[in-house]
Length: 409
Ligand SMILES: *Cc1c(COP(=O)(O)O)cnc(C)c1O
Image (cartoon, rainbow, N blue to C red):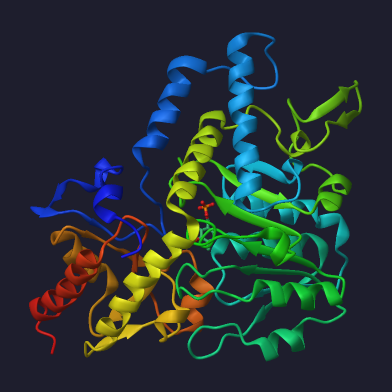
């Protein structure tokens, strides 16, 4: 294996516990990842020694907090290869970032304009566009998927027209585990003068991402799926757009001058960061990036791919299992949604829990996708840098045991 799991697992004490009389196997990192000791230490050290508001105090603690907060911005900039630190806006997470973008672009849409997304989007990349469409009279359209859940590029080419103003697509699906051709879609979008947006919640934690190479106008992701605390995330934007567009939240921090009737805005990135930010979260995100960089994003990606290459064929060989997304392991990330035919996914998830294995069941915040693939819900196992081949074996054993328990052949 590319990564030394034995060593890595010492950094995640939470994984070393017994659940329902069995050693915990955590296969729900697509919902949220666990946090390494280094991140917990940095957050607790910040509260123990430096806690203070940022960008305000002319005192030592305030300066330390500001320095650590801004150092994290530099780490994020380098991590996604943004051209300029002012392009990194701290938010609460992917959902907030996408909502911000939809608000920011409101003035650029007219009645009859089209917003184009796909059937595989997370609700946070669906509902902000539904609401924007309602406010502006724009039309929300969906790109079709092929039978294995890939974007149908012929349909994308047909639907990206001069009426298209926004194209917004997940970089990696949180259900199908498929990687989408964001760069190619961006080229099509830009050719008709549309904005290209991508939801990176399932990509940034698992592979090296270069926003300049992708050439997207906006990109969104969450800290908590990449070893950082909850409540911190990132909105990346093209510099010229961030400079032109108006803020969407107002209050302290984001102003330059405040009059009785009118105010002016601070320079980037403060313009989009109203109020006291999640300082500890941002510092924790910086520590998480250090941790991921230490392991190497390419190594993390290879490690997960090794697990998928090993696991997916074994899973496919079990009769009575339906697996969603690409059947070729090389095209499938560590997110594996499946059903045991004849069992409700909630029963599957409960049966797994009794065996110490945490998998998710439900619609995975992607109801339009579930309807599209004609399922009410699915179970989902998702793997990350701390999972092992041994756990993949236990997962297969649990499937067989669950089938047997429910009397399925
Ligand atoms: C988790 C997730 C989101 C939402 O992230 P939050 O951290 O809940 O805001 C959006 N898109 C995808 C693909 C996700 O996996």
